[in-house]
Structure formats: structure tokens, C-alpha cells
Length: 272
Image (cartoon, rainbow, N blue to C red; front, side, top):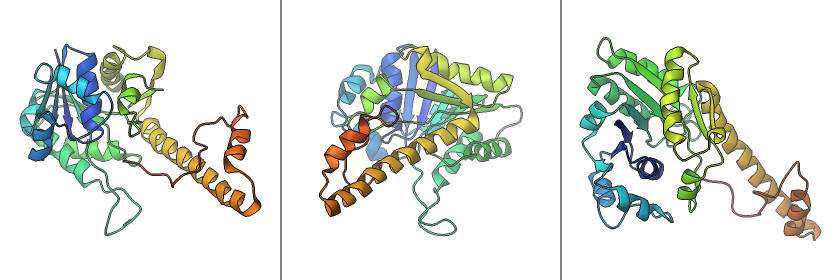
């Protein structure tokens, strides 16, 4: 039986890992977090996150092959694959404040994996991270782990939207899995591909190199933000000229090169 550990029981880690447990009954999934109150909520009838369909998934598998715990070390020891799904907030001070991602939680989780692991692991970036973060993780793992252990790092970014997270996970447009293009990296990549293809069509599981996967997540975010910002800018022009932004958006959206999605004037872009 495959054992999966997800470090981080937040908006991404909780639902993403729960869906794996729901779809793969022969895979043990343990979601760990140092926040006792959050874990208690996941183990209660009042989950800490509301998403349509999430309760059904969690309640049907919890205690069977889906577990929530604060025992991070034991989950790491038992796991074959470890998802790192912790916060990467914007830095509040120092170089890059207000712009760069704060990777303190990523570094702490990675260091803990290295210190605790007794066998080789596949470590999977789930959090949204800057390009080449996997290289920093590799450096930490190699510097702090026991001799003879091997850590293969994969990139598997999330593409969830609030309100449709379960649909996004069960019927995704695509799943990206990036790895080093070495025999060992490709073997690790196949382990994760084999899990996702239990319920996702093979053609929607896209494999690529590690750095392409990291950048693809950031590029998708940037392109969506650009589109939302563009229609909002057009909304201001419409107000000044007497044009109707909905009519303009419809006219532009009928162009097959542009398409109708994300052409609704609204508040600025953002995320969870």
C-alpha cells in the first residue's frame, strides 16, 4: 500500500489530499499540521473549510484511508510520497518585502523531512513557489539528511478556485507533474502519474521538466491576472465613452483566438 503524507492542512493541502484518498482506497493519506485547532476541526463534523462536495469526501474516507494528525514526524517516517503544501505569503520585511514570496515555511518543512526521514522519499512541491525553489529544497535535504538516503523532488502545482475546488480536483483541465529528466526523476514522476491516472484521463496528466512545471503555475497566474486587469481597464474606458462593458466583452469573447472566459468586469484579481 502506498503511504502519502501532506504537510499543511490548509485550503490546498486538505482538499487535494482528501480527493486522492477518496479516489484511491488502497492509498493511505495522512494530512499533518502543527496547528492543533485546525486538525481538531478536520476531525470534527465542522470542517475548517467549506467547499461544495468536500464534506462527503472527507466523511466517507476519514478513519479508513484518510487521517488528520499533528504527529508530523511519524507521518514523514511512514510516507513514500510527501506533499509540501504550506503557506508562501508575501514577505513583510527585508529584501523583496511586499513582492517576493516568503519561503520560511517551505524551508522549515523541508528541513524537518530531512531530519526525520529514515528511508528515501519522493518530495512534492504543492505550494505556489518561485522558480528554482526545488533546487533550494534539494540543497536543504542533502545537507540535513542521513547518509545514503535519496530524495526526488517533483513539482505538482495546484489550480484551484474557491467555490469549485472539488470539481477542479476531480475533473481538472490538467494536472502538471514536473521532474528532473533523469532515470530516477522520471521514476519518481511515474509514481505520482500512476496515482492521478486512477481517475483523471491520461491526456490531462501533463509531464514536463521540473523547472517548466514551477514556471507554468506562475505563468498561468500572470496570464489570468492580465486578462482580468484588461477587462477592468476596458470597463473604465466604457464608463468614459458610454460603451457597455458587457457588450464589449461579448464581442471580444466571440473571437475564437480570445474566448469568453475571464472577461467579466469585477474587483481586481486575487487568490486564497
